[in-house]
Length: 179
Image (tube, rainbow, N blue to C red; front, side, top):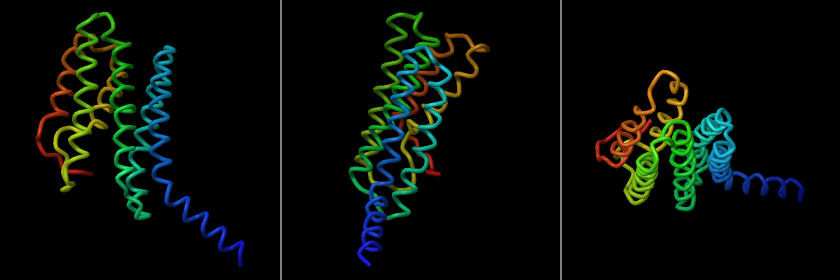
């Protein structure tokens, strides 16, 4: 009887922390993407961002399924999003396309990261109503990451417009229904 109780308690504890563990996996793959970019392993950097996106898709679902939504989980999710969909894709595409633009390339890249952070902070203090305000950073990061596959057919100058466009869309206030 004691063993059954112990197993049941362990399972309950695991359910309590599962969503946050998935979120930590998200931030870990975002960090791995950054390190891959630094080491010029760009294909791995892209792969790790996609794995982070997969994990990001399910951490909230798991939290809701087990009724484990928390303020800690919300904050942790935003911190992982700024790493995995802000810094990681921005650094990857900066290295691939904007590095040669010098200071202006750095400014455009930092603008994207700053707008992503602003968007996440605004999201965290806003009541959920079934809509996003502005383009979610996960979508912006996905667009940047997918654009990696088109580097050979678009000019680097394209990114001088894409980065600011995504930045503006993230901080804008248009409504987008949550999926």
